[in-house]
Image 1 (cartoon, rainbow, N blue to C red):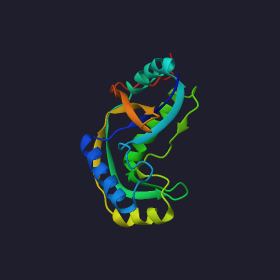
Image 2: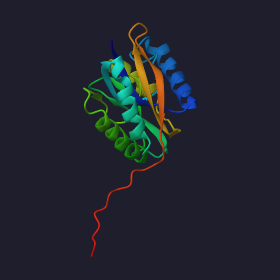
Image 3: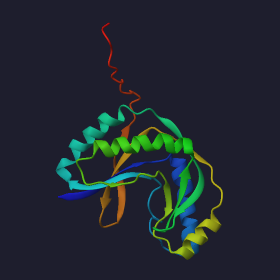
Image 4: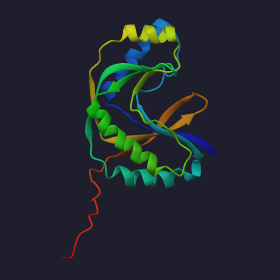
Length: 187
């Protein structure tokens, strides 16, 4: 049976709780909106495959993640993608520069799949907001300063009944960087 999966970065439980409080506050002002119930995350990619194939890709992700080293992520400002109505928390330039290569490497690891990729690391508060609701969100939330240690990726499965993703696996960073092959000279 085909199922939809996503690969994401999850922040710490404290950051997840802080984001939930923000989402609930926004919901109290504008009513229901897309992603008001989703757990805080930074999307890497999404794909649909036969459930029986998942273990193949999980093994590939384990191998890839073994080479990653944990690092600190700082989220320090709000922004939006006005064309899609997304209001989000953005990482600092340093954090973005650490997240992007990992996202790219995971995209490469799963390149044989038809991926819905995210190339710009961000933590959504709301999606598909109307221009009016985007304005309300940007007036409600003006300053932010959150940090978490990024030391794993999370594999999630979409539940079509609840219409939410739920965690099915976490894949830790192994802190075993690949040795770069350097062409040497004998003489």
